[in-house]
Amino acid sequence: MSAYLANDELDDLALPPDTREGATPDQKTAAISAASAIADGHLVAGGVTLPLTSWGDDLREAVAAIAAFNLATTLGLAPESGERSNLYLRRKAALDWLTRVGEGKVKPVGLVDADPTVPATVGVSLITNARRGW
Image (cartoon, rainbow, N blue to C red; front, side, top):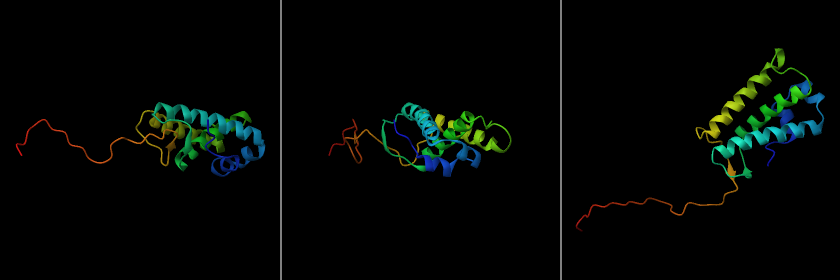
């Protein structure tokens, strides 16, 4: 399994100051790993072969939102209410996006999966049963 972002990216993308300062590096790494595993499940459901060798900011942002919410709950910071409700809303949006990825309705930008298979035919092919008489 890949971790789709680093601890410093989690800090920059998703963590409010109280969560950033209250969490240890190990807690951040664990939250990122758990959120990446959730993303992997949706990616596989959408037909992606893991591990990925490259991914875009959309996947990184989704994993950050899920990890931030989970980290805040681990720290007992009630992310559903008040000033932290943004964590809840971002997590919900990320999970909705990942659900659409799993259903094949959305294709994440910049994904390069581990499957090196290249289609056997490139270009246009035409097959017809009608004789032209040429």
